[in-house]
Image 1 (spheres, one colour):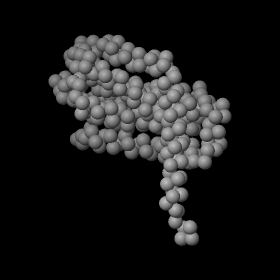
Image 2 (cartoon, rainbow, N blue to C red):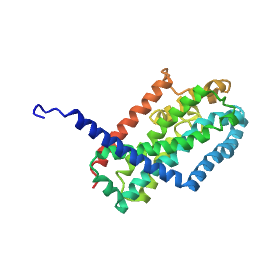
Image 3 (cartoon, rainbow, N blue to C red):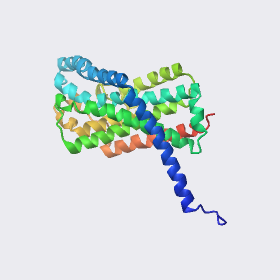
Image 4 (cartoon, rainbow, N blue to C red):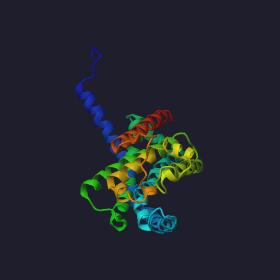
Length: 284
């Protein structure tokens, strides 16, 4: 228009096109998920085996050290396994970006008359949905770990799991847009995810780490996601007896509340998404 404003109809049409493109990319990721039943089953079995086999073994060590019983440790481990259950689906989004770039499909997507950032967000939302579905299956096993089924708490846990899944998916996508070879991506993500998981307090209390590693863990966004989940599930209260397992995450005398911890995860996710979207828009 002469005054430089955009007509409302044109804006609505453009927004509808962007939302439609994001929905189509999300739907494509969901179709891959629904068709890959074997991969989904193997991923879920891996998480359950980690929880009930490795968890029982490590729980025996905790019981022998007097830090708590094996049951206490399995309860402590539960939120960490939720996060780990989301990782394979999140990493697969990064792998799909690299593979589609290599076989030329990504180039066909990028010529669509929509924002490239929209395409990336659609992919990340698809990965988040799949990863959350994986985690919800593990969430259903809470009763076996002495975590009470409380609808409000479980709804909040599912929301926190979705946020964490989105954060992991965005991280995998951010790595993928800077990498051209699938093998390189697998190596980089493996090297990156391992310390993020181990430093998050998912498998053992941060208080058990040496001082310098404990401070590094406070720079890990997964630390705040796992701690917020423990608080929501009431696990911090269940484990109040064994001091080593109930130690909260803190910066000196400052103890972040769960909403503040989730805000940290959200802020870091947004920053990573902006970086990934800028790089994705430059791909050719």
